[in-house]
Image (cartoon, rainbow, N blue to C red; front, side, top):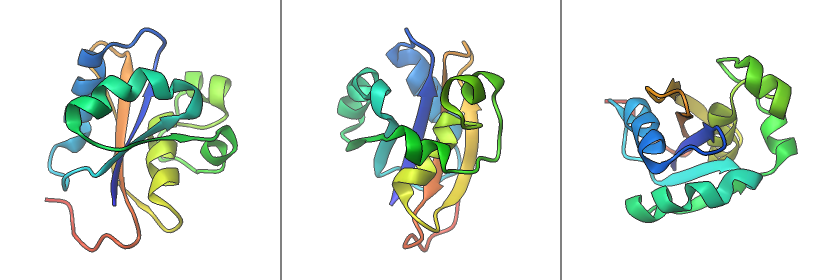
Length: 126
């Protein structure tokens, strides 16, 4: 399983989400799932539909339990996690997951995306 995790500001539109996704996905295996914080799920539905990928909402306690590579002051204040994108990807990919692409920020700074692989994924980034 390859998961793209997203974090984004209120009002982030589909172009911002797509831009962050494109940056994170460069050189990575194809994504099979999308994830974000539970309360942000509805805003990510248009991207999930456009990509034809399943979407999961990650509970706040599961997000906070993930140690992230990057740290955003805004994310720490609002969510008690360094990166919602990284935490969402890692939590959905499951125990033993590895981060393939740390959070990438859309050019308009409205959205972030990170890519993680489940422990069962045997490929390597391309």
